[in-house]
Image 1: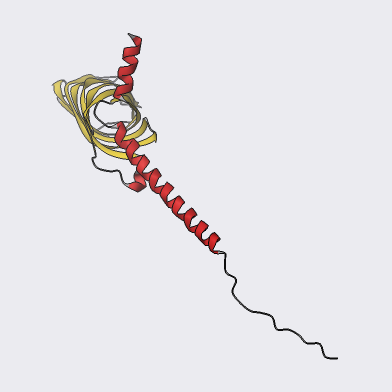
Image 2 (image 1 turned 90 degrees about the horizontal axis):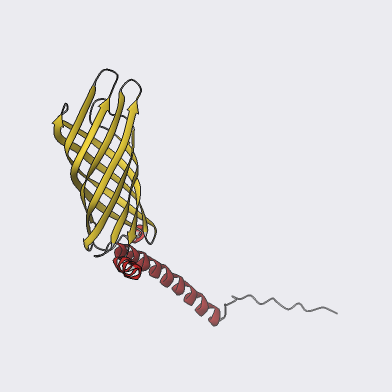
Length: 221
């Protein structure tokens, strides 16, 4: 007796319509969450540089490229504090203390105090760099350099001027890690009339909401 063999059915298996809908909803949810995160990042950056907020921090490392003969590696500390008089614009003060030395060239003591102004880039942050903000800083004050060597001692002090671009990256909603390239010059008196440097500064700033500071001051009274 001959056994009949039934042909196998060949076809395409289709996913249930419910699974397709769920997959589409999941993809849309992920896209929505990504867009929401980008918008939140932009809002956080904009909120920290609004009128009434306070900026406190400083540069903790300074790499001196130098435009004068004999310039050397420099390390100094530059505390800063500023108040946002309007969105994206802050004015404040700085204090500079530093020391540099090189074998056979003596040592320098650097000092300065003065006023600063910062202008941050306006508009929305770039989505890919939503935690960053560009700025330009300029300052003017009384700066000086006392140079000590085995044979000579020189002093340069007078009007200090500085300007340069920078970038602030917000590692938290209230703390920005910064890089600043600044051209600095001293126009004054002493044994050296002028001096100039091109510096790369690395530091951090803390952005404090003005309303929180006012509430803290009220509570302490």
